[in-house]
Image (cartoon, rainbow, N blue to C red; front, top):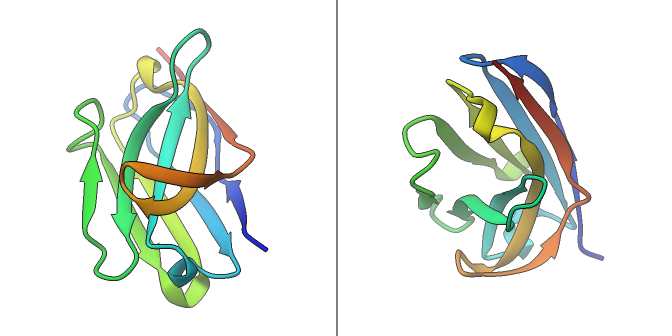
Length: 118
C-alpha cells in the first residue's frame, strides 16, 4: 500500500531554515519520482522540487531554486526538502508526492504546515 508521511514543518523567521522529511511506503524505489508540492491559501498547488529515485536527478521551481535542496535516502525510504533562506511567501502547506515523472504525480501525503514570519 502506498503511503507518504511528512514531518518537519513548523514556524520560522524569515532567513531561517527548515528540513521536511517524508517516509515513502512501501519504499522509495517503488516510485520513479518523488517530489514536494506546496499550496498557500487561495493559491494553486505548486510543484517545488522533484527527484528521480533511480539516479537522484533533481529539478526545482524558479521560486525556490538556489534556496531549497531535495535529497533521497533509499536506505531510510525517505525524501527530504532542505529549505534555506526562507521567505514569508514560502508559507504554505507542503505535500510529499510520488509518481511516474516530474510532471505526473499520483500519490500525495497529508501535508505539513510551514509558516515563515517577517
